[in-house]
Length: 68
Image 1 (cartoon, rainbow, N blue to C red):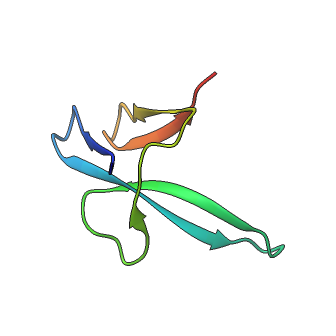
Image 2 (image 1 turned 90 degrees about the vertical axis):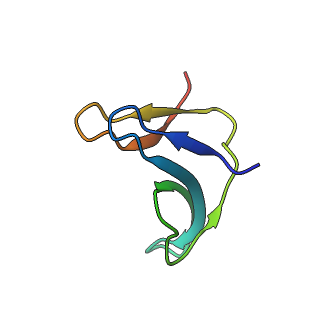
């Protein structure tokens, strides 16, 4: 199921997306990001295990943080 997050400050709804990026050394890494609109690349994603959503107190933008 696609993960959606409603911002407390901006009152916008963000969708979690994922995409694979190629690093300089040739390694491929999966990144997760939130977007209020449909991005040019990436696909909607489920919440990855071991992570929680945190909202930036100044901007209201959500991001993932690894659980301890």
